[in-house]
Structure formats: C-alpha cells, structure tokens
Length: 320
Image (cartoon, rainbow, N blue to C red; front, side, top):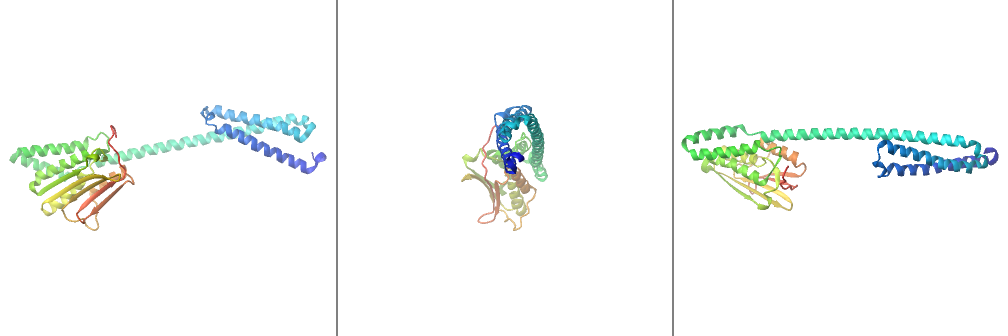
C-alpha cells in the first residue's frame, strides 16, 4: 500500500477500518448484551450469543473492508484476515464473558451480605423490642401484690378487682405474639388497667380521665407507650407529694398526625430532664418502630404535659 498509494492512504484506510469496526461491532454487541428478552436466557447461552455476534459481525465487516483497502490483491491475505478476525473477536468475547461472570458473582455475594446484615438487624431489633416489652417495674409489682394481700383481708371485692386488672396488665405484657405494635384502643385499656390498680391502692388521691377520638382507635402505636408515662405521673405526683393527682389522657388525629397527650397536676418537669428507664424505653421503641417519624415534647405551661406526635399513621392489620 505504501508503494502504490503512499502513507496517506495506508494510514487513513486503516483508521477508517478500525473506526467502522469499533462503532458497528460495539453497538451491535451492546444491543445483544442489554436486550431484556435475551437477558432471560441462561448465562452461558447469553454469552455464547454475544460471542457469535462478535465473530459474525467482525467477519462481515473485515472481509468487505479488506477488498476496499487492498483491492484485487486482497485474495492472498483473505485467510489471514479471516483467522485474525475470528481470533480477535473470540478473545474479546471470552474476556467480556469472564468480566461479566465476575461482576455477577460480586453482585450475588454483595446481595447475600446485604441479606445477612438485614436479617441480623431484624433479629437485633426483635431482641431489643422483646426486652422492652417484657420489662416490668419490679417496685410496681411488689407494691401491687402487697396491696392485694392486704385487701384480701379487709376488702375482698377490691382485692379481686385489683387482681384482675394486674392479670390483664401482665397478659398484655407477655402475650404479644411477636407483635411490636398495638392499637390505640388496646393501649388505652392497658393504661386504664394500670390506673385502676393505683386508684384502688390510693383510693381518693388519684383521679383520671380519657378522651379518645373514635377515628384513632385502630391506629397502631408501640406497645406499652402510655403506661410508663402514666406511671411517672403517679410516681412523681401522688407518691412524691401525697396530694391529689389528676391524670388526663387525650388521643386525637390532626392533619395526618397522631397526637397523644398525657397531662397531670404533679410537680413541673425540671429544666434538665434526665429520662429514667420508663421514658427511655419509649424513646427506644419509637426509634425502632417510627424512626424519624415522631416527636416528643415535655411542657409545663399552660399545664404540665407530655406530648407524643407520630407523623406516620398505620392502621391495624390482621398480622403485624
């Protein structure tokens, strides 16, 4: 070519040939490699099809191009052109297959690790919730049992009523069947069972009221989210001061937000509030079950109150 056509033709023709092969072969093979229908084939069949596409396309381009470049003198070089084209196409196809296989294996192992981590996180969350559900204030249990023992001698009806309320509370605590949520109605019933026990113990020194919108009864909340707050109100109000304690519970829905308010007339919250186990368990449950979708407020004016806002509304399902 140098003798007949000079450097310009020799270099230019090879450049045009290489560019045409690269553009046409690359795009045809990419169509085969990325076709959704062809990806349904097995890995071996799909990669064999890509390999065949590479070889056939390379031959279909290189043979006509060789006649265009060399003219009538292409004949003696034809065997070399065919063998080199097959070799280059096959080598490229095999390299692509190996890279594709390694990529699939890497992706599979990554997904396996992700699944393993997800299962571990799920088990960790379940274990943490199990601990939070099963933890009952031992002082409350001790005092309740002592009160039942005393009442069994002086007032059998009150002792029976208190025993039933305590049984309901514990049944709710341990028989949750892997449910991490309960309905607002169930939470209200259990908070009331707790306050019935305390009202029997302290008689006229404790009053409570509940205001729950009918439309929120079937919304889901973490189990035992009310009882620790009510217990704190009794502990820091009635037990600490000996004065009449009034507790008001309100649950309503406002603009797609579930609002839970627990107000009492006990001593104000300190400026630097340090949550005890009960309040900390509420934060832990909310972090696990409503991550980033809740707010908790402690206010003293115009009335001492704990407010919980759940920004994600979920209704009761058959299985949770």
